Amino acid sequence: MVNSVLRRTISTKIKLPPQFARNQLLPVRSTTLSNELNGILNTFKPPIRYALAYGSGVFPQKSYTYLQDQPTPMLDFIFAVSHPNHWHSMNLHHNPTHYSIPARLVGSDSVAWLQENGPGAGVWFNVQAKINDRVIKYGVVSIDSLCNDLLDWNTLYLSGRMHKPTHILRDDPRVRLAQQVNLASAIRVSLLLLPETFNEESLYRTITGLSYTGDFRMNWGGENPKKVENIVERQIELFRILYRPLIYSLNLISSFNPLDNSSSASTTYEKGVFVQDYSPQSRAKLLQKLPIQLKERIRTSYDQQSNLQQALSSEPLSTTTTPQMN
Image (cartoon, rainbow, N blue to C red; front, side, top):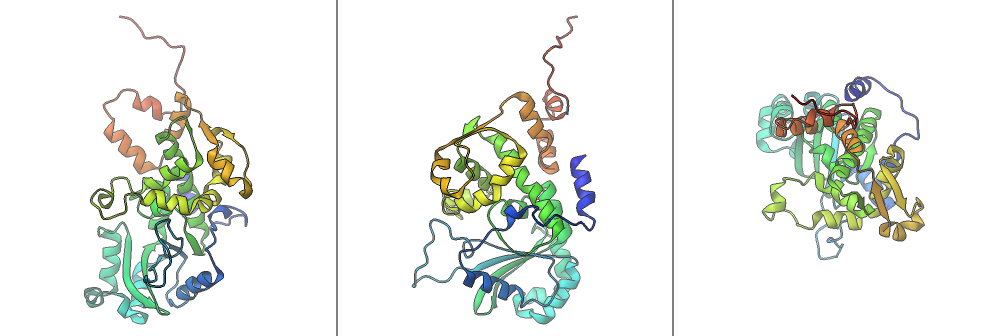
């Protein structure tokens, strides 16, 4: 019910208060980088509704150090557009070398079809594109597909990517609202995976690990097995900006120690303990508000267990009813 109302709201033109979801506006390390990212975005002629930059080229990870003898890291972008077919048609005209030769030959209709129906989670990537003397990779997604994934976790591809720090270059109210739902979902799922007491860093590691769960690259050497740890440790302050306001407003943590939201308290806050309500009623409420696709997968996996429907229902577990004896 809640998700259907959100979907109707997000599918229409909406106006949000200026201060809504400002936790999503994460800074980059320098004005020079900010100008470079915006300069690259502004070279694109087709209309882009929402744009973000992400990855180690934007937010360095612990294992990465900038040395003169190392190549400059690739810059990664996601562009959300209203009409992928029209967008690719324009972009093929202005930036044909961004596309592979087969993509150029088949044209924008086929590229847009493959984007929406192929194995790429609704995203078309152009890699190794060179703009302003920088090598970039950018993914193109329809604004509708992006919002649906943020709300429902249809693929957990972009929604999982956006659990981690990103730098918004061009904002859109539909995406901002859907992203706030996505962040809240990440907190709820992580609480179901965490013990009753845990520290702040454990929460962020759990959130970050959601999008890597089942990723074959983590098991077969394609990714650094300490990737999650490296991301969180280097970007801990960005995670705090992104998630602390939601942690407080959702009221899902029953106590904090110490309770201090100032940036100067970061060292002591790491050592503090979060305590969540571990009662069956509280766990059931977390289950109720899971993204639709995740909830359906849980139903499918445990449809033989008689107590699942009770756990997902809105009624608290009865403590007074006794079983009937025949």
